[in-house]
Image (cartoon, rainbow, N blue to C red; front, side, top):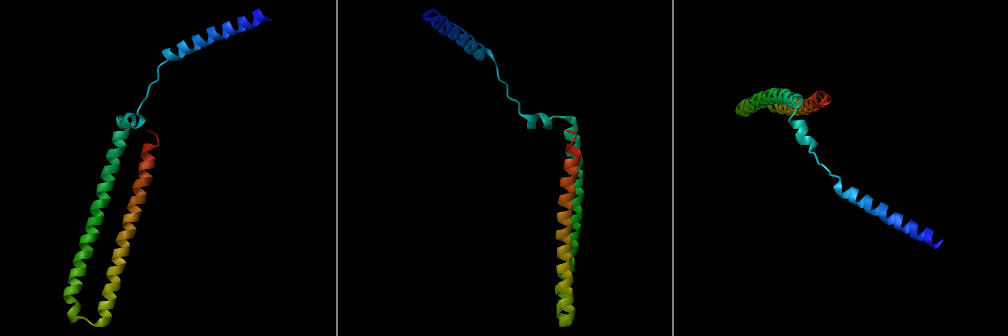
Length: 123
C-alpha cells in the first residue's frame, strides 16, 4: 500500500511538471479587432458613404438655419410697422421653423444610424 501511495505521488509529480512545462510553451496572441475592421476596404467604403450622407444632411441643415435666421432678421426689422397680432403670428411661425429644423436634425441622425448599421452589418 505504501509503495502504491509513493508511486501515485511520483506519477502526479511527473504529470504536474509536464503540464506546467506545456503551459509555459503555449503562446497567447492579442488582436485589436477594431483596428483590423478599420483597415478593411468594405469598412472604408461604408464610412465614405456615411460621410457623404452626413455632409448632405449638414448642408441641408445649414440651409434651413440660414433661411430661418434671415426670416428672423427680416421680421425683427419689420416688427415696428406690424400689428401685435401679426408679430405674434410671426413669432409663432419662427418657433415652428425652429421645431422643424430640430425635427429634421433628429431624423437625419436616425437615418445616419440606420444607414451605418445597414452598411456595417456585413463587415
